[in-house]
Amino acid sequence: MIVIMKTDTPNLEIQRIIQELQTESITPEKIVGKHKVIIGLVGNTTTLNPEHIQQLSPFIEKVMRVDKPFKRASLEFRHGEPTEVSVPTPNGVVVFGQNHPIVTIAGPCSVENEAMIVETACQVKAAGAKLLRGGAYKPRTSPYSFQGHGESALALLAKAREVTGLGIVTEVMDPADLPKVAEVADIVQIGARNMQNFSLLKQLGAINQPILLKRGMAATIEDWLMSAEYILAAGNPNVILCERGIRTFDRKYTRNTLDLAAIPVLRTLTHLPIVVDPSHGTGKVEYVPTMAKAAIAAGADSLMIEVHPNPAKALSDGPQSLTPAQYEALMQEIAVIGPVFGRQSQKFPRSTGTSFSTAKTLPKAPLAM
Ligand code: PEP
Ligand code: MN
Image (cartoon, rainbow, N blue to C red; front, side, top):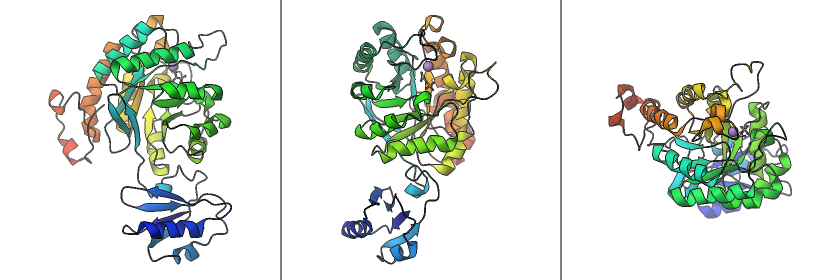
């Protein structure tokens, strides 16, 4: 249930209402949006009567039940206002959200050695990436496949961050590694295979870093949002969803089926920002640029792209990794199509691309990759 306060409500009145609504099973939460303050009530709200709550104060605009099983993740919980997830990096704060520039995250599947991660970081930065991805702990189907260099790879990511100022996105698999990963990561990735590792999800409330929550390969949209709910309920409000493809019957020509329809669906259900990963979503380098552009057209806030200096020699996911030159070419195309969908590019301003008269009529969104 949510209690929407009128715009001019004094803070003391909000505190008073919060105290009134506090029970053994419900801890009211104050949610401060751009235009409104909302008091969120999560727990056993079945016995609460919205009409009685409405009478608590003339400053209450409306009381509404949230029917969805995911409460904090639901669009209603923020009264339709999109969440902005801010990620401080040495190069500045990167914001993920609907009214913000498209953020690109790029880098290799796995961190292989210092030269490759630093070189890749410099190249993706030059092409417009704001964050560097790279796995230190790799979830692999086979125990005989490269498992990632672990802690030493974390140190290499820290080095790449120091050299380029890019923020770092890297995966945690084992809850025991969380403190070490959180020391280096600006965004902690939860991979598809761990999307429903509930004990891991519960521990993510203990860290400050935003979480990139990948969709499980057989997860429904609701399963995915329930996993996001675990993180939000644990006390970490900074969750970014990442669509990376789901398993369907056809695996011959693509590795996964990239569910781009999930983007407009999510927009009706949740306020959380959305990243699309066309690398795992297709599994093949030749399809990555097309699906990256399609993701922008479908309304994604961000892209995560695997880039490797020598994909043929990659220790993991070479077949789906772009070279730095291919990545740069894709970023230039996105700079051109972005404005058509209301998003512009700082790095490649509109004058370098085709001018689209429709862009003027679209909602104005700020710049860049
Ligand atoms: C990855 O990002 O390299 C990865 C393993 O992704 P996923 O969890 O989506 O398979
Ligand atoms: Mn990968």
